[in-house]
Length: 113
Figure 1: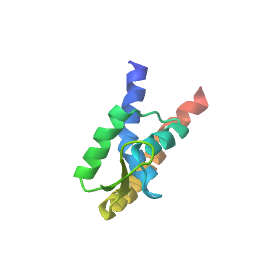
Figure 2 (figure 1 turned 60 degrees about the horizontal axis):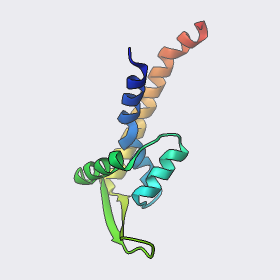
Figure 3 (figure 1 turned 60 degrees about the vertical axis):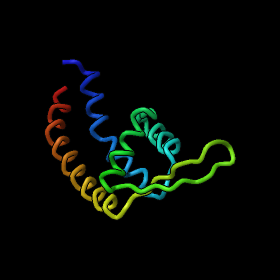
Figure 4 (figure 1 turned 180 degrees about the vertical axis):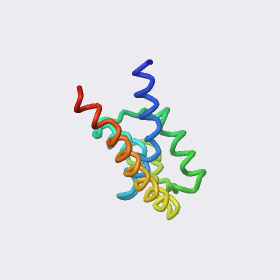
């Protein structure tokens, strides 16, 4: 088993969920999203973030607006739509169920090691 590949796949599986979670407290532009993810030790690069933001926008979960910047090009600020908030709520419920189930499986393993 390639453990690094498995870990990378696990991270990729939760990125959209984490992006929605970051945006749950208000609008952010991509650099802010990357910083919040970095603070949480979940590294993401622009080349990964932008396609995810586009997909979430196309799915109706995000909206955006442009704002002029005094220090460079205009910035695109993303925010959750009502569908995005509903999806985030469902993902939180699913995440809680999943982590509880996984913890029930791995806890006996951890006790024997």
